[in-house]
Length: 171
Image 1 (tube, rainbow, N blue to C red):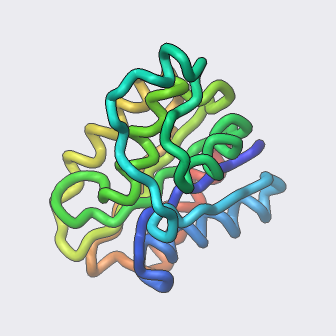
Image 2 (image 1 turned 45 degrees about the vertical axis):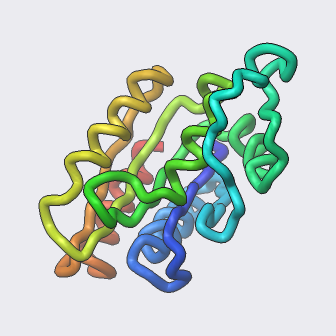
């Protein structure tokens, strides 16, 4: 399967980046084609709500920023993995911008499965991110293959790594 990991942490060696890399390694070892994109290193503006994409644009966004690099990846992905640090109870802004910009295509055409990897310093801050993830899966009519969260005591541990591997097995 073609797996696209959209990773939103600005910290190159942070906990979210580690989770995304672990998923990538496990998925590649299982024979899947994986592309990992760090959205935090991209310049992606929020949706303008101009409706150009649904009128004159025929599904193309009027904005020409780094999201243009992501649309072809999104079009080919069969699995989408969101990897997000949780700073304040929901998905970080670096993940929000590309998700909101997917509005122009309504739903990725080939995505059939999704997973969420989320890390935070604090425990019990994941409900908002999980709810948004669940709602995206429902709206796009895709299967959630799982959510892995890791607070400060669970980050970069063998237990968290195993939870990630368990999700990869569902691909």
